Image 1: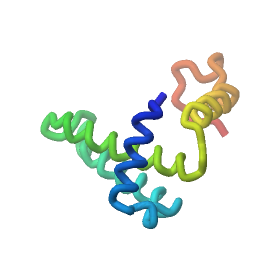
Image 2: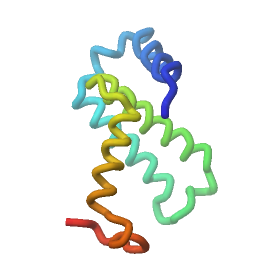
Image 3: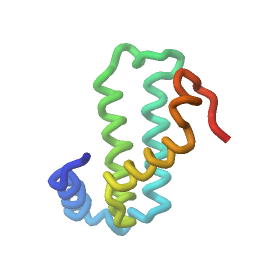
Image 4: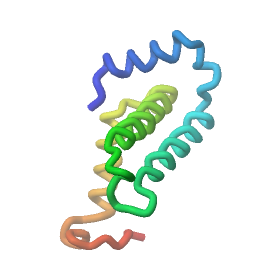
Length: 107
């Protein structure tokens, strides 16, 4: 999924700036939400990026992913494992024969 070298670059970026002290799980979770809201803002009033600014979407997705990686790293989660685990749970929750072409949320 995300290469070890990319994860290590994020770790080094943070370490070089001595920011680990600020990256509590709560702060990282808040940052994910804030950056996700900034991504959503790119689509305010439209289903396409505002003013066609795909680069801004690119940057906001990167911000969300970086904070997700940092929070996962903080808890020692393997990104592939948590994604595959969630996909497995979702496959049981949303079987193809019931969910195909249906956007209703399962209960």
